[in-house]
Length: 273
Image (cartoon, rainbow, N blue to C red):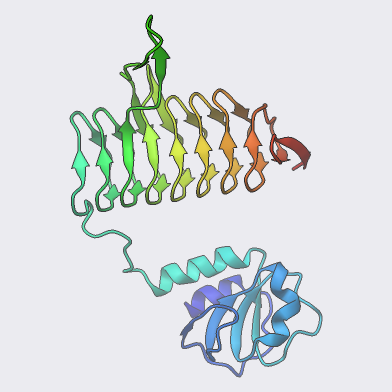
């Protein structure tokens, strides 16, 4: 750990403190290491006897009762320290939890971890290094109905599947429906939070984040590096361009172009990003 600190640090103001573990920024625990985002830099006076990883925006005269390690991305460097300090921590053990159901013709890559009570339906394809939490349903039938000649709703048969690419992480209590025809696709390195619904035929580009309570309706196309904020609802067939974001509880009913932040219900462009 200390070799890593030497590599990332640009300056340390006070060398009199030891490091005996990690803590949260405002925990009253001395001799620990933590990190501070820029929003809390003005509260460093409330913290003492810690080693704090901070950005280059640190005030000129910070609290002298702490160590300060100045880096470009404090949270990233703190994450690296946690990986070094706790290499044996595992989120799921064994690889398949209790009561996991795997359907027919499911293909799974290397280093796949699936939590308790999750169901993976037939023909699902899962890439390498994928983590799927507890109580998920992957590849179930989507909500697709059509009225018959008597005006009664009948379910449209879903003959597609779900493809989950490499390095995807899916939280708990999330549903991803298979396509009616073709695939529902979750791109490489996507992260999907708890309590998310992804409907049939959705395409999500690589490195995108879908946050808790979001509802992604059928045939939605989400680009790469997209941030879908908590409780966002996206109408069926909508498109979100690359590198774009939604605000919390946004209702997306019209297209979001590349590099845009949209908020509100219905959505409207707030600014370019």
